[in-house]
Image (cartoon, rainbow, N blue to C red; front, side):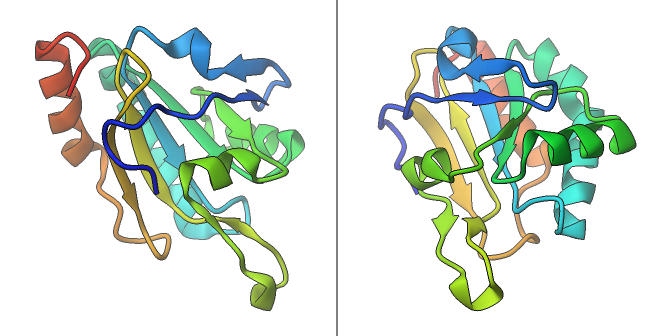
Length: 160
């Protein structure tokens, strides 16, 4: 996983609507990226739903929320429709972005590779401000814990 202070790797990926989303369009505000395993993981689905309830608070703290997995645009569109996810859910189908952020895990024994659950917060200048990787879909901090980081960043002009 990337360390605090490192530049966040650039990306351009498709969201659940097939719209290109680039990291650059969000810079200038803190960005929370939720890395999740994929549609197959029931814990990840619950996690995305929980964050949807928090998305407005993220915006109120002048930050933006994104999610990312290896799933296809079609799978993300299905999840967004079914679970009313309105923030961008990005398709990293070749896992290059997940690899660059340090969440890619080689899981050939399970039959497929995927990214592990993690959270990265990027400051307004594009530097990693916070990062955590979980070895499974449980154990990541929830929105309440992340809110403390975002409140601090809001008070300090988008920096941590």
